[in-house]
Length: 199
Image (cartoon, rainbow, N blue to C red):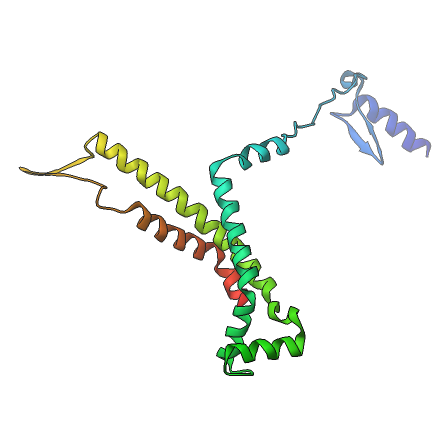
């Protein structure tokens, strides 16, 4: 033990850059660390005001169109759910062959709520689909209309092939047709998993 203490003392003064023994580190006197307070860092990040940002987004025209589409889809499915139930029963071949007979059979077997059976999954699918469709339709239609107006004012771009020159024009393209195609494409692409879930 005395031999170890002497070697520790000796190491303390002759150590190259410090040795670690157990949990204690011995350094030579030339490299003694000063007891300075460690600098403290403030790692707090400013939290954005999401409520204000949400209110600003909700005031935009696009958000209103998106919500209008969602409400229209929800109301359509809520009101027309009984007809969807009867149509599905008749396609599958369950029950009566006429509409009034199918209505009466469903009401007798399951009550009035039976007419809305399975409507939750329809609502889950139709609300985002209609919201995306209407929002995309209106946005693309506005963009196409403003592009057509700009091209009319500036005579549009010109393409020249040798002595032949063409003025490109967007006036022959219907903004409604382009907007409808874009709306159908985007909503189908975004909501296809919900359609698979419904089926």
